[in-house]
Length: 252
Image (cartoon, rainbow, N blue to C red; front, side, top):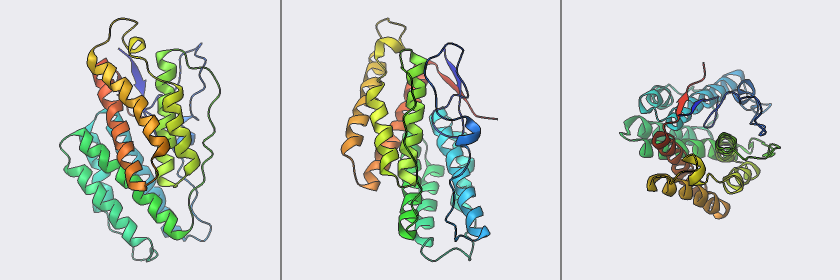
């Protein structure tokens, strides 16, 4: 059984055992830092962006951990908090879209439905940034190193989840493309996941699904379709973790 630790984003590990060759995503303290707001933003707007960023990350990480109950508290905050009257009018429809998606997450009785709602929340953020003409910038630079072990590749998929999320909220074509490419470059072969034994068919299907999602992601262009694909991905992460007995712990 694996025990990994979620960081601020993605299907997380807070570190790696000695001897691992793969260099994971930046340290959790770096990943937890909200993106920079536009220079012209007022302090109230800046606080609004940071609060939404933090709560959305908490909700998403809970889905990847398979913790539906833990997801509902941050999603409920996003759904119900009062929107400041000082927000620019161009923001308000997109904030409404985000809150509607958060309500769907709160009402969800299974992780797949909640995961779809999380993807829609990310797209609502990206739509707002696009409307304002201030998309967030992400590099999508791939970490160096070879992924040969199961843990290496799980961390690589964590990195992919983070980049795809950035692709939604930016919106960032560079980040999205880097994330879906990583799913193809570091496939989780079923035999690896089952300690080189014959894996259960469910594990085979999940490993194939994740690789296929990477292929689909390369040609998926519409924001709503990307949101749906992202929801499928984080839901598949949870299903695979559950089937393999992988336990993910929230960051402290």
